[in-house]
Length: 334
Image (cartoon, rainbow, N blue to C red; front, side):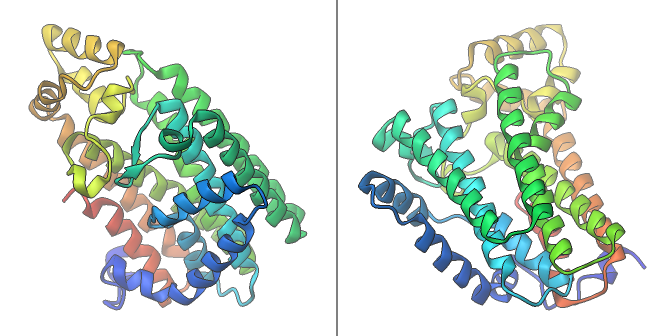
């Protein structure tokens, strides 16, 4: 039986259905988030309130809730863990926006654009520390070790990406090493901890971790692809942001591999100088070299691997929802 027929029963046919399945739990998660974001420092409250009001899909806490359900977990620890995951993710966004000098996220001004880099960085630190306060309350050394290792790995990914800025010799393996640390790792941790809470066998917990890792790859590759082919109103940011920051993401890497000498030199200059002024010509190059389609297929491959990783788990509506996320991850580019 193939993954596509084993998991999806029809009840989880879109992302809206998945959100509805976890709505009550996510309400509890968001209530806890608001409680724990409260501070007697007014500026922290202003920044965190701005972040909450900006919205977002909350994929990482949602993934953890779904994985916990698929693992048969009955309890309340997943609510705190979901909040921890969202705090960690949000703190990385605050730091990212400062490093990338971004002024727009989810269609709204970034915190650093409104309050400055120092306040934004310190608010990110506040969120990190809040996440560790929450995880300590769970009083489980295994959980704390996983989350501590995860946050450290994410920080490594941030530095590794910084080292790649403006460099034209970054290959696919180096690119994947960055997104594994920056993005896929937190997805993997969210899913793994759900399996751990449910008391699954070690091989099943490992399968959930692999699911999260592959799903994280797929989401980030699609995000990087949409930077060249998406809609600004839908994305909530301007197209070509990665190009302007000199980030050699997968579409550019593939284009460089297939370009002739003249085109390759032109693309290299764009990466080195970090400008979105030539976005039109770069998009044309990415399309003409087949890099756009190749990137799309790479994302689909990782999504398929994520779905296959679910085969060791017992069928359930929660498993259907996890499988639906693999479809959703790449549906944005089909």
